[in-house]
Image (cartoon, rainbow, N blue to C red; front, side, top):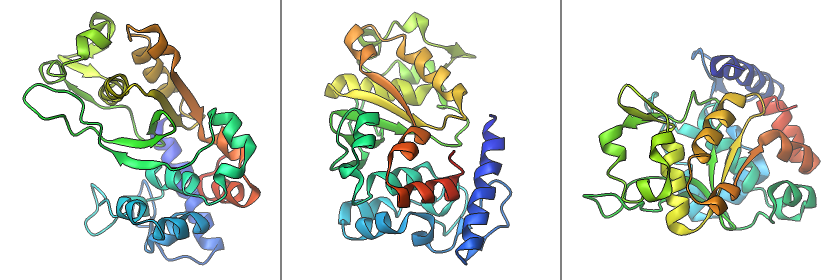
Length: 254
């Protein structure tokens, strides 16, 4: 499914969800609706847990990149809101099905982790990991178009690039490395000796292809084997009914 089509599907699911729960939303934007109250954008038990955790609460203050005065998680397309609705849920670690899907019991997630990836001319770059949990660095995607791109000269400043990747196999187009976010994340995982996981929607096989194309360029066999893709839908099928109903209604997971 094309990202723009998925954005519209999720927008419609969020609009219907807001209407059925009598929530105040701004529907003037074409690609997303904006929940005027941040609490309405997340699953309520998860939001209550976030409010009780100062570090998690700070994460929700991230500003929207295109809309002044709006938080990123107020958007119906926010992958961060989806991530925190799931992994901040107070009962998540008690659901064996979720642990089976992930391969570990999901406890003590850390959002927006800064791994300080070694880069020439810096004390470590500004890479931000969406979530660090139980030996994994996790990249969460929903309606984003791709993993962005970056000029070759800039990416080559990463000190571990050549030792981590078969660089001749990485995708370069018009002097820019494609799938830049994956490259940074895998460099961070290598540096910190973590496994890596992509969380994305089953409706976005294009992201899986881009991710795995970059993973296959890793030199170390164990690092390659430590990379995984988990779909939001797999978690939805395994979680408790209350959270599952929210994910289905709010994001159209099915």
